[in-house]
Image (cartoon, rainbow over all chains, first blue to last red):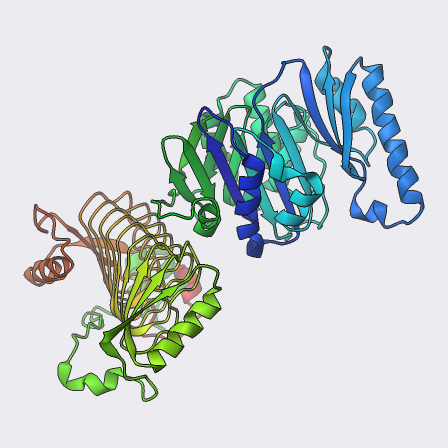
Length: 312
Length: 289
């Protein structure tokens, strides 16, 4: 089933981490397998990047005593690659043993550096960008929020996802959101099933894009990244997807300063939308919006083939 | 039917093929059922175990901090105590509120609800001063439900009786599998509304999305605005005097009569080319579908 949620503040920052946690926890019944956040803070120096990586899945950590060394080796390898590409690490934190947050400066070919890091199949860059921080792990929203300290995250906008695994494993690589590798600051969450996934995936792979999982939702991130990299606007990419991608889906996309939504031609996956002058919030169910706006509000259901984009 | 050869079938139009195979008849009218409430038959509209409630006995229930199960259980306890008017406060998008109420009751929900609000009801009069989520009034059997704001998709799915009214706009697949009763939408409705509708009436004062009335068996849809497209086997039919009188009476009853009247409303019914109710499942069906 899965639950998705998004929030965007116009022209100001707010406690987006805490707001997303409240919304996603209210959607827990739509999928308790994993929870993910893509939250955006206000822009920093264009050469300064926040990189979130994971160095182990649950199955890696289940091997016992060797798991610590495996993860340490992978982190050491990432550090060496960063140094090799001339990246300067400003800070490095490990909120949990299998996921790290780097702040670094880099003046070179960042996509090439990202590809180098991901040559080790056990290491995945969850996100890289000037504003984006992508956090996803197994468990419900409060579990993930507590582990990663998300209640203190201030930012302008964000999207999130509670997952009920249906077509791929319960693991971090199949959890949402997906970062549009290797393009900075683009993330996607999705509720639905994509029926021409393999056709579209092979098309994207022929164009040189990489896939980390077998989750159909990852296609939307790659597809969006491909379009944006080729000069297509976010709104046009969302519109094209309704014609080019088959299945039932509602998905949300964030860029550094935008949040967009698209609903498929059958309108079979829910989304409730609240719009005010300074805040737009959306979720699979109204109960998630009411978790942050308990007073009476007016909400609507976007229709089939509806596409909307909001600016932070 | 037996004398029709494959070659002949292939040369026929679909309409000719349907009739040659005995898939439909020309006498399919008069199957729609619409029952006006008969005051003399009141006792047939109450279950023997239904509590005897007094509409003048009113109480409020604050849903804050309660689960939907606790709210619905509390409502049952209150009805058993004779409360005939119950006001639910602070619902905040909670799912499944007021489901399965099978007796007379004035239920007022002050706020918005989530999925499946007042589904499976048989008798209560409900007023919701907010918005409702998906599947409001699903399978409702009798009573009236009035929603002041918008509604989500599958509004009145498989509804069997009563009046389900939304002053705002509703989502997609409104009245899917509707089997009776009346759905009234003050604003617009989304795609595939009236999908596989079987009985009853639906009134959309605004616009209707694509594939309206797709695969409907029977029933009637009235649309005041634009129809994006009709679904398979849904056809337009001229409004009769009976239609105008019914629309005028029903919309006036809920204060939703448009200024311009109902003369410009479009009436949509089943073309009945896909009608298979009166027949067994012949193998020949595969030839036409």
